[in-house]
Amino acid sequence: LLEPSREEEGCCQYELYLDQKIEGLFMFQEIWASQEALDKHLQSPHIAQFISTLEDNDWVEYSQIRPMTFVG
Image (cartoon, rainbow, N blue to C red; front, side):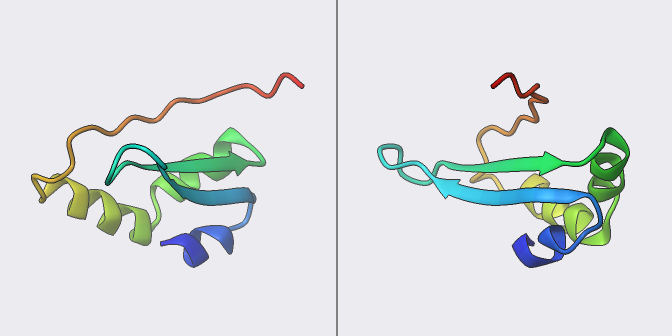
């Protein structure tokens, strides 16, 4: 998932973090060159497979995409 995403056109940053205090909590931090690049990424086969895996497992409690604007 990480390498195919990092190799996509328009990917500026694609990082995966594990929370230091909450066991099993992961966070992706992604920076894309444009909304178009992000939209294309979200339609890619490896992301579709990842989302399918999340939906098929009861160990995923919560997921959210939060677009952010860089301010400094």
